[in-house]
Structure formats: structure tokens, C-alpha cells
Image 1 (cartoon, rainbow, N blue to C red):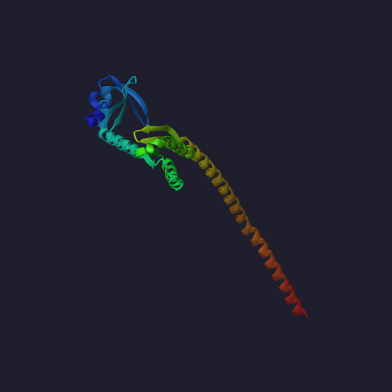
Image 2 (cartoon, one colour):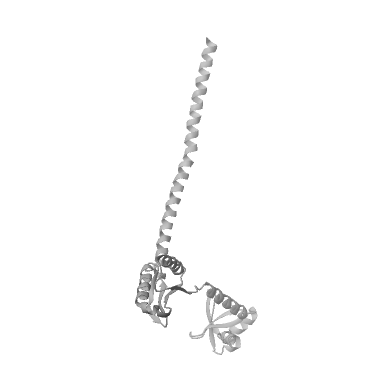
Length: 236
């Protein structure tokens, strides 16, 4: 039924019962009688597909309908694959968690948030340890405070049976802003590097010409000197 609903989303060929339609293409649009549009579609070996039924008149295109549906399905699949899947990562504490264990779990929480996942941190109270629920709340609030740069609290500590939990979501807006700043900085650095490279290339291009002239002049001067000395020796 789901596929049938998708298939019937557009009216095609004889399903289009209005008197006239606007046919759009790469070269513009033309209003014509629906019967004429159907004849043109048959001549081209394609379908007349109504893509905007609420327009006056309805807008249609000459396309291969089966190919059109396949491309739409493929595009929807690609978009779904690109969607970021947000997972909820859980981190468990005891009411009297040591500093080393706390630091280890804090590090993992930062990684989870940087990856775009949510974090559900909770303190599990076993037996009479429920008496330390205030201590567990302080621990979770400290945890949220230490993650302030990476995430924002969605739900403050709440007691759920033998668990007291807090939800922390990633700071997506902050990460995007930081990425944009980084992109701008990298662009400026690349432009400066390219300008320096071009200046060096121009400098190197000038060196051979000047160097060659000076070198030739020096060689000619030495050759003239030797020739003069040789003539003097012969004359002597």
C-alpha cells in the first residue's frame, strides 16, 4: 500500500483530466490543450506527468515516469543515508565514584558529544546507597558542568527508581560556528600562501635573465682581458 500511495502521487497521461496544461521544459514553458500535450508525449515516447496540480493551469513535464520514480526513490535513499543518526550513549556512575574513574568517563562523554551523540549519565543506587542520592545529584551536576563546552543539559538530574539520570545533548550550533571560523582562517592562509608562492615564482623568473646577462658580461670581460694579454705577449 505504501508503494501504491507513492506511485499515485502524480497524475499521468489520461489521469490528467483538465482542458489545458502548462508544459515546462529546458527551453521554457507553453500552455496547450491537454490532448495536444498527450499526443506530443506519445510522439516522443515519454509520459505527460502533472508535477504541480494546484497551478493555473496545472504544470506538466514530458518525462519517462518509471525512470522518474526510480530517480526519486534513489534520491530519497541517498538523503536518508546522509542523515546523521543521533544515538544516546549511557555512562554509569556509582554514588561514590573515584576521581580516576570519573576522569575516564568524562573523557568518553566528550568523545560521544563531539561525534554528535547524546549522553545519558546516571548514578545507580544499590541497596542502602539510596541514602546518598544528594551525593549522586551533586556528581551529575559536576559532570554536566565539566561538559559545558561540549554539550547542553536537556534534562536535570531526576530520580527514576534506583537511578538518577541526566541528559546532555551536543552543542551542534557551537561546533558549526567553530568550523566556519576554521574554514575562513584556512581560506585566508591558503590565499596568503598562494600570493607568496606567486611572488617567489616571479622573483625566480627574473633571476635567470639578469643572472645570464651579468654572467655573459663577466665572461666577455675576462675573455677580452686574456686576448689583450696574449697580444701583448706576442708583441713582446
